[in-house]
Amino acid sequence: MLGGMQAPIFVRRPSDDERQALGDGLRSADAFVLRRCQVILASARGERAPQIARVLGCDDQTVRNVIHGFNAGGLAVLRRGSSRPHTIRPAFDAARAEQLRALLHRSPRAFAKPTSVWTLEAAAEVSFEQGLTPERVSGETIRATLERLGVRWRRAKRWITSPDPEYARKKGRATA
Image (cartoon, rainbow, N blue to C red):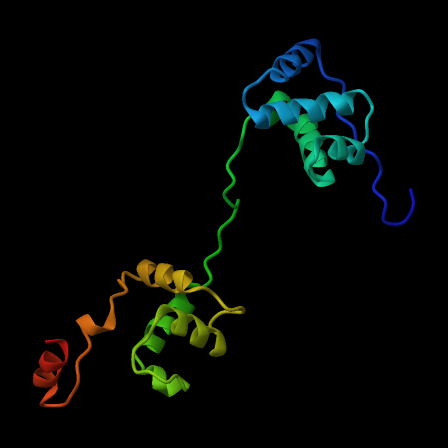
C-alpha cells in the first residue's frame, strides 16, 4: 500500500437470503434502500469504492460506510438510522452556566457593549470573550443553557426598570 492510499474494501460474501433481499431492494421505491443495495451488490461483484461512488454519484466515504455497515450488521444497513449526533455535550457545564447567569445580571455596558439591554447574541459574544466557552456559540445555545437553569429569556422591555422616579411616567409617554 502506498503512503496515504487506503486498501480496497469489499463487502463480505452475502448469504443466499441476503442476496435475495438485496435483489428485492433494487426494486424498492425508497431511494435510500435502492442506493445501499446497489453499493453492496457492486462491492460483492468486486468493484472498488471509488468506482462505485463515481457510478452512483456519491462520495467514496459514503460507499465505505455502507460496506462497513453491511459487514458489521448485515441487512440492518438498509434501515435508515437516526441522523442525530451520537453524543451531545452542552457548551456550558453547570459551573459555567452559573457564571453565565451571573454575567447576565451585570450591564452589557460593563463589557463595552453600546446598549444596556442584553440580547442572546451579545450574551454569546461576551461569554466567549470572558472565556466561558472555548469557541463562539450561538444565541440559541445561550437560550438553551438558560432554559436548563430554569430561566426564561424575555424581551427586556417587559421587565426592565429604572431607579429614575419619573421612569413610569416617561415609559408611559414613550409607548403611548
